[in-house]
Length: 294
Image (cartoon, rainbow, N blue to C red; front, side, top):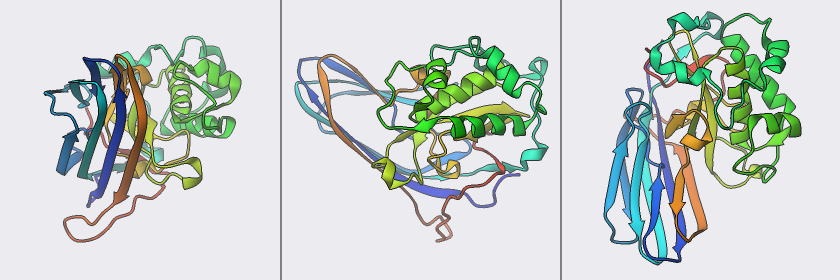
């Protein structure tokens, strides 16, 4: 079923850089995706330098990419959006896995190993741990819970090239590492899984200031359902930015040239919807999706 009222969220992003050479290029992916389940009420974008902007929306993921070429000196991007997120909610017990023969074609790539999600390497381990479970939402949730319980969230404990197999060995990481490990284990037992980016709504301030967040979506039944294997944020409060095979497809900022990051600021909150009511996202064991289904 679809929730009767959407959750209205407002978020702000500020990214600051120092450009140290002429003609440094940037690609940003911080704008909220426009989908049938995520309606943008209003948004604004500002760039501190008077440079041309090029925008591109990926038809497959609804991810919005912003490209620009900056001049030497400081560069600041500011973006804010208010949006309504309408969740599809199912009882977890009612959601089955989907036979590979019945998967939509655009889901098939998310069965395969990828750069940071070596499901082929982890196949034996995954089958031993999860291969005998009932093939439904509960198996994906069991993988999510296992990753959350077996891996410690430790800021700065990994780097941009840490893979799922390395996280399994080290048993520590940050949100992207939790996501990569869950994705690899799911794919290893033939559950399509993808890497999705948003903001960490509801994260404990002890973990640091608000930040971008990586979570997982698994294709079950006829749609993509959300999971947060790090357990640090509240999935009902996730704003979709983009999705892909792993983090290599989903960077919020890519820089080409002599550029240094000089800081960032993010903020997200629930605000009053069209009826004047603030609906705070909350944790639930129901199956949640912001995918319109196939």
